[in-house]
Structure formats: C-alpha cells, structure tokens
Length: 309
Image 1 (cartoon, helix red, strand yellow):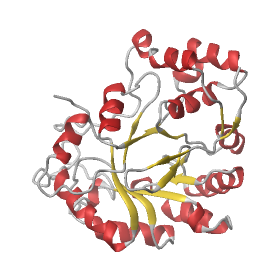
Image 2: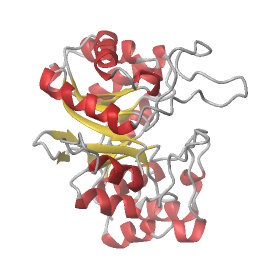
Image 3: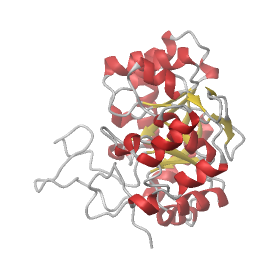
C-alpha cells in the first residue's frame, strides 16, 4: 500500500522550463466558483492553474492569483487561444493577459486545430451557421495559426507555446509544415483509463512533447469513479478513486488537470500516491475491458478533429 502525499513532482518541458505535474482545471466553472477554487487550490499547495479564453473566466482566475499573495513567479499559468481568434493570436493573447491581469503566461495553447468565423456574431465564442453547425473558416490552416503563435515567445508574453486536442495526424502535419520552428511544449488532450491515448503518448514522448490530461476523472456523473477495477485499486491503497486516477496520470509521465469547485475535493485531489507497476498496468489495460470512451467530443463537422490516418 502506497502512502498519500501532496503532489510535488515537476516535469521539464522541451525548452528547459518546468511545469508542475498536477494543476487545477477551470473548465465549466462559473466566475464566482472559479475565484474561490483557485484561492483554495493555491492555499492547498497547487502551483499550476489551467485556464482558457473560451472558458469565459480568465478575469476571476487572475484576480484569485493576485489575491492569493503568492509571488507570480511561483505559479505556472496556462491559457488558450480560442478558435474564434485563430486569425489573430497576438491580439488574443493580449486580451487574455488583460483579463488575467498578468504580464505573461507560462504556457499558451492553441485550444483546437480549427478556426471559427469571428465576423459571425451569432455567439461570442462558437458562431453557428443557420443549419446549426459551427461556422468554420476553411482557408485558415492550423499550421498558419501556430506559425503566428511562434512569434509570441519572442515578445516575452508567453514562455512556452503548445497545442490542445491534437491527434497524431495533426501533430505530424504541424511538424512537417514549412514555417514550423518551435516544437509544442505540450499537447493537452482528454486522457483517463477509458481513453488512455497510448499511441499519442508514445508519439509525443518520441518528439519531446509533454501530454497534459484534461478530464482525468471523466465528466459529470463519470462512470470512472464507480468503476469496479478503479475502486478495487483505490480500496487496496486506502485512497479515493479520484486519487488513483490522478496518480495514474502522473505515473504515466503526463501532467494531470483535475477540475473541481468543491474545497474538500480540490484539497484531496492534491494528494497522490506512487502507484505500483501492477496497479498502473491494470489501469493501462482497463479500456480493453470497458471499450474506449471519450467524454468530451464537440461537433466540428465536417472536420474530424480526432481522426487518424
């Protein structure tokens, strides 16, 4: 049985910067909830906060960081370029920094490998066509967006850049593009035992891209926390199912971003164990029993964001 301890592991990024292995996710958290959550997390010992322009809560995230009293340099802050701003990464980063009230972020990610039509005012973040589909700009390649993002590192407004929701196919396309210069520091994707993304993990390690796991506990009412195998491993180690899932992500060498707005859960999610090889492998193979399940899958039709060759 492993002993729970506060997470202290850090990973080194491909540019020499370091990133705490465990961070607080803030997706789907209201302004009031996220402000309190970030304060609780920082007080509990978290030093990594993951945000995004598209979450609509950068302002309270930044306010909580400032109000925590913890020096800015001690906190790793991520935000993301929204698809609606894919034509103007520089302007969008400036907007995020203004929202956050910060001079720089540690990591700036392309949220999706898609560009949406900002001229369409049907929705501030996800403009729709009359047929209900997302209004996608097809003559803007994500490789062009990334080329513009590369220039942001020189400005000092972000220390690192990366991507999110990228498949192996799209990573290969990015790495082979003519203007490509900076290897993404990270790729943030959905990862948990029902969706281990093993091939993507192997590809990423080969190319020195660190994977970050979002929705590591599944989604609302997730079956992961009730799964018999996960609960059995949790009982054996005398910890919660959530602790097992978070610890497994770190055991695999990935950053993990559990999201909660409940103080007790935020605090307990920061306790991890050193998973045994036996337990780690059992979780690694769980998808072979349950089948592969993705909980976060927006409709980008006709683009198949997750598709492989």
